[in-house]
Amino acid sequence: MKKSVTLIIACLFTFSGYSQAIYESFRSIKLDQNRELKIQLPRNYKKNEDKIYPLIIVLDGDYLFEPVAGNVDYFSYWEDMPESIVVGLNQRKTRQEDCQYDTAEFLPELKGAEFFEFIGQELIPYLDQTYRTAQLKIIVGHDYTANFINYFLFKDNPIFQGYISLSPELAPPMGERIESKLAGSSDIWYYLATATNDADNIKNDLIALDEKLSAIENPEMNYFFDNFEESSHYTLVGKAIPHALENIFEMYRPISKKTYKEVILPLETSPYEYLVDIYRTTEKLYGIKRKIRINDFIAVSTAIEKNENWAELEPLGKLAIKEHSDLMLGYYYLGMFYEQTGEPKKAMRAYESGFQLAEVAFLTKDYMLDKVNKIKEDFGW
Image (cartoon, rainbow, N blue to C red):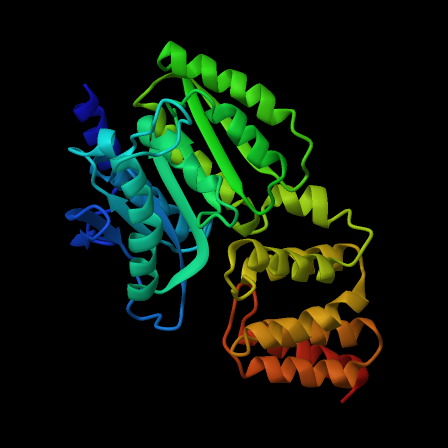
């Protein structure tokens, strides 16, 4: 049953022909053995030589790599998350030893301690040196391995900023340790999932833990929990992974219609500053600097025009020219600004400058030329 469900999930979420896995055998000194890795690089990794990417480590890579990699490829294609490097660590024969902990302190021991050091001291440094990884690193685990990923959370400076814990079989004091850590954490994303048909002991423990974590008063804590209806210990994986990615990368997504209507349109402060702050915040959170999306420029400019807050179009236009110097968008905003503030000659020159650049969205050369001709006609030039 487990194998068949895994196969179905893999088929649903893997995009063959686009982002194909690289298989590597990694020699570990800590473990004194080779470990098999599955690595998915972003689609245009080779072309974008200066770009860096978040790193997602997937334990139980034998069956968990494909659904994670497929979702990452899909979400990043639609710009709902940054393109990322996904690395699966096969553990079919070793997962019990890998996640071994002692029964006194309930911390990694023997092979478990070696596996912990292998990830932190060998695998991550190797991946950082070999591939263009960003600061943001996420780790994913399921049941036994989902318990294990928490040990990285307890370090003073965790190497992982994101934790996707799928139906973890928690060690006895693990819940209290997670609660204590998240209560004082910042810039950490923690996702936890169970299901109504999950194993009773796991489900009950996680529901109880969620009650404690949800009560934590820490505005900087990024904690998410799901209890999926009619899902099992295995089928919840297919639902949890996309939901986890949605939550972790909420700030990264394009401005939605809901955000436009409920946040931007009624803004009493500067829409321009709101846009700049979004990208400044996401750069801080995810460690990735990116161009401002055309969609986000248009959302903000539409709100500015509806509210007739014309002064906002000048800085918006200059920012659009800086971000997309090859497009007519920025000069259109400057033309609108000058036109609405009584400077028709400057408006005409701005539209003429935009006319020479590439079309974008609703802006065409004919449209820009019409704007120029209308000003000439109105003023008899």
